[in-house]
Length: 230
Image (cartoon, rainbow, N blue to C red; front, side, top):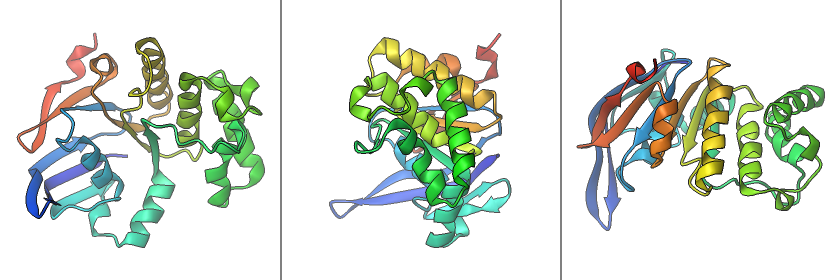
């Protein structure tokens, strides 16, 4: 799915002071590509992901996904849109401790009404890809941080969303494990034609990206493009 942001402006009230996050920002994220958003803490990286997903809406401008104007939807419509089309990967794994790996992965698609067999088949296939199928009956506290993040990635993909939004997915991991997670995300997304937008401080993510943007001057500034790949 292609994502088009046109003339986006967004402000927040910060102790009764208007804080401008974005001003007349325009950007395009095309299908089947890996985009990295860099920038200091507080510049608006997470806010950008919230705008793309419809968790938040711009003060001005429009956000279109494959031609559908998400920013014009009401709250209920945006919620349904997220559930059907967007998967999230966070810095914190947010696994439910009383559920097994398999139960954590299948919970969302079961709540969405997907047949149980379909849920289980998809979960099994993805867990095999991330080499965690043999841990499917373990609880999260039996897993390492890297293993928990792999479960969180599988959970984000089990509904087969066309857009993946990742917010600091390696932020709680050591450098070596973070590298493994970046490789995994890149392979899973690129081999499926999904659109991935990742907000991160990690310079290591740049080598996996098709396009890198920095949040500067209340807009997105391209830093690298496909020429970084031979």
